[in-house]
Image 1: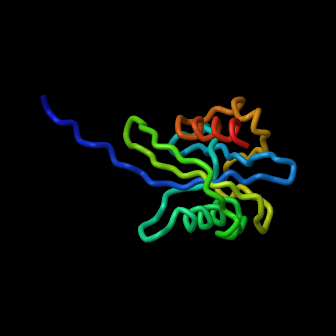
Image 2: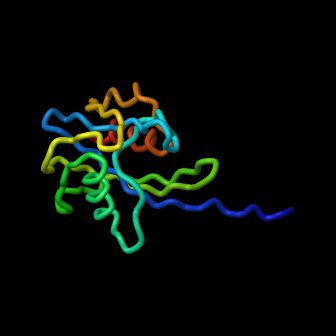
Length: 138
């Protein structure tokens, strides 16, 4: 029996922005990106030397033109999920306070969604698990 080569492990960080009405911001991955058409919680890869909190702040700034402070990020849940070509480890932070108005800088569609309605949006496996945690624990 031959040993399979391990899948690369991707470390990413995501954030559930919660507005004053308790809705959660999700983004639809644009055409041309991996998993295009799936909805996700904003965030991205953790760069070398970066903490998950720093990655979330950077990604929200780049993707949405919003500026959360690191102190406003509250660890909520994490997922460890296998995909065909890689394995993802992703902490999810909650954030209720930020500067700016979310703007889709990468051509993604945005939606403010009540936690009970997250099931109505097609998400990939990792985000499905996190959405379930939000529904159950918020």
